Image (cartoon, rainbow, N blue to C red):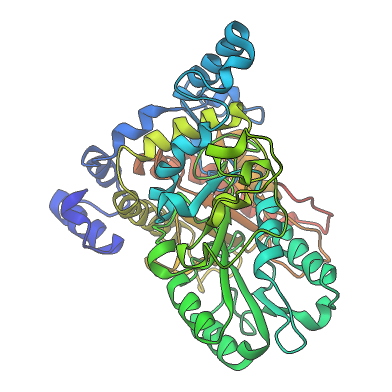
Length: 486
């Protein structure tokens, strides 16, 4: 896709459709771009479930032998092909060498995660010594906040987005309470303007400017899990630090999705999981970052054996020789069986660059947006026709690869019909008392996706079937309690 890297997704689609003499929504456009995708070989590095293997699939509607459409990388990535091999190697080592596995082989258990932290650093735009692979995301967030959140009578607030991921919200709330403050006073939640669904960068910066003297920590998501909004992390960091605040990010939905530059932006701290776009498997090993400028000044509030210098760790003299920076925040030996799948995935990322992946992501997401707007845009002349509204920002630089969609009808039936057809998506479906819209998110996890998968969703026979069901559902929908789907 090199010739198109400098173009917006819309320009690329216009150029290719003109070149081929067809519409932007034609199969020819998707096929042409897939054939010219310089990263298409990466798809072969992952195991892609067949339609028949997905429990909700209805094989009377779809060919079970085909690969499924996996648009839920924002929830759980797919398995790298090398993951099982690496896990089997370590199980075999354990069986044959026992305790000697701690220091033997290509992955000595005592420091195996250290061997891949450089690969992880490349993905998040950091120096290797600024990154640690350890624990789970929320554990790391708590560990970091214990050291970065030092409230005073004047500066005691934490600024974060309203409707942050529940785990972040709870972590911040409990940290404030732990330090003896009231979340009602010290938890500053940024809300979108009335009638809007995403935050404006200027409003975030304005709040930091106005409230900054009372803010101890600015903590935002890199990408907002519900709306898919990619925050301007560089601008937020600069504004927060200008007011004397520490600035950190939960990069769970940004790592492996957006091109991060945590070091260059001067971010104070960050943490992330690795089971979404980084494809390390459910409950995979998480990551944490502390900028080198804080390496000698911000110390861990809680220490453990693994934060001790490896060269002197096994003297067992109980004299702490603390590693600088994020390395000193390590508590325990990391599980080798979690290191293995993460290594397998990071090696795939190392076959390219986040800049190249991001270029592909812009095009894939832009193409999916084009299809949705073409087939399901609101038609004022047909007020009873179901339609789809994209709540994710339309500008490619303000989103990752996720599009969050709200519907003119409750989406339980839509979710079900897609799953029947071998399409894996993520839905947020609430009961009638909820003030939140029904939202379906499609994540074109670009490291293993292609444009023809987007097009497959909109093949005319399937569109007509789904439109018929939507129209019928729209006419006969009743108030019912709906459940949240993960």
